[in-house]
Image 1 (cartoon, rainbow, N blue to C red):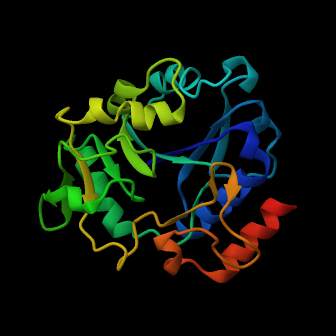
Image 2: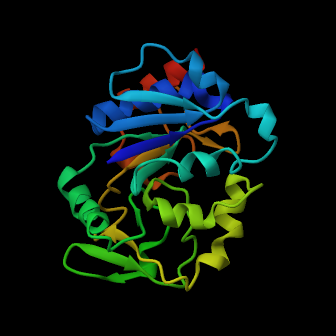
Length: 239
């Protein structure tokens, strides 16, 4: 399954290479495209499974997050894909067997979205079958931009002109309730079990969430992170 990594010039040069490093460490052999602005063209020595796409000059879009993305995603060939942000750093091995269960639902056209990295409380879901949960139609944050698998149709249904990413998540919150879409997750007991995509949110409102060897914010998934990985990230993003 294709993975799209969305970035802005703010984090392209120092965070994207770190993100790619850990994707290839903990989820190898993904077909990855970094989608960003002019600074993605400056990235060098990327692994062979990674390509970049430049949406144009970031300044041309002002505060809009959606305007450049709409025509791009309208023209991608994939009917479904994994979507993450540049500062969502994968920090634990992805369980391929669990992910295959989720992907099968998309192959069968039985899902519109799958949360793989949190974002919607599991308390707002019910059992779909022995392996899967389905989120309630009135669950909050159905438009969460935490790591997820989306169908192209469902993502574009809510991606409207002149949106920031906050507009997409929060402005669409009430619109996505009772929309009939099937949003799924693997059945598991978080935080006693990790998300399929167990990740570090590296920044919150522009503030870094780590120091030289530890997490400095409340991130329940941190129990699944390795200290040496934190040290690696700190060294790379601070240089």
